[in-house]
Length: 322
Image: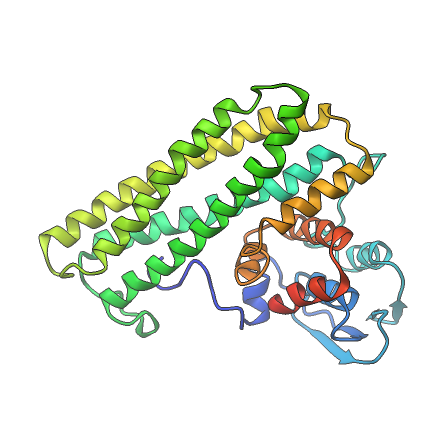
């Protein structure tokens, strides 16, 4: 893992935006539309998962048009995604939603649990990266892009700081939006969860300070190697706890949100409040965040964003990853 950052630059190739080895299709696909329109950017993003032979022709038409072979389609997002899935089945992007539309539990799953899934995925890579640093014990990894050992640790430090920002926003979203909502239904429901947050944040901040200390140590010293071993152990422990937290949310929080039976309008307000508290996740870190999801999950997350955010903001977010 020592040869790349866990959070990457937004100026990426298509293969990096859609990093899935099974995307082998070279089927020629043409997309035209207004490059500043959220609808065009949404379809553009979806097509990056489907083919490596995408041609985009800018136009003044806010409604995107897709041509695959001799067939052309334009219409609603849902209609176009279904057409794309039929013509290019892998990976599937269509999300099957039960009758009745989005539920409060689904909102929580996509806004809340997606953060945990991305967190665990990136944290797993950071654990492997730290193990690699321990194995090399102060020696460079041979990748000129990473620079010296000390420069690599600085990159590691930056990646962890960004990851920590995502998780702090996730915790704030739960504490300020979801937990108070559940507490209105039954007092004391979220006591244990709040206690966990109070315990976990100092641990995560402590790891951040550990990395900061390692960055100034002599890379050839015994203290440096020992500090790396301790860091690797702490990261591995944090990963296991995060996975447990994710499983607890799936088991405990989602059923409670479903039991609230919120109206469509109430669900939309919850969604807006959640997104408003996740400014970093949906701005500078959005590209890295969305890459941490599977294709179908990413499209469903974008659907939620487009349901409650204004056109210009959605277009700006999508533009970051395209």
